[in-house]
Length: 180
Image (cartoon, rainbow, N blue to C red; front, side, top):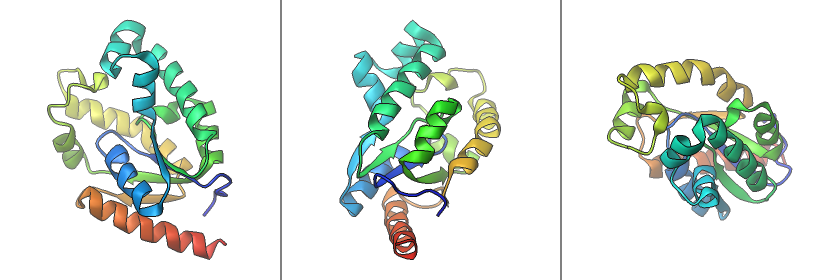
């Protein structure tokens, strides 16, 4: 693995609907680590849900909060961290993610992604006429960033969150042994 796990964190990156939050909780339990969800931290900090933050502060305000909360979380150790899909847009956040430990890119196919997030009103970036086109646009922009940060890429498209967590726990244990 490229990154040294200096503080024992495992950072999950990937697009919305890839399973970062759900898989992250399950993975943390399997590995006996803490769990931190950046989006939940942003909502707690703001005292309002993400769509309300976007409405009140715009995307720039949300991203500033996100970068601050992410930095605080990544200062901790021994945890699985679920980032927001766009958290890596900020160069400072990318550097913090890279330095925080092992980075796992959770991939998801476009059809599965759309199915997983269908009807979710908590995603302001998808409040558009053609959510599928917007998802494709976001993926094209972010894919190189996800890949550039990742120590490990894992496709979640055809597996349940439990299966993903089980497989990742085994892969991460193998990597830890190989680099001990």
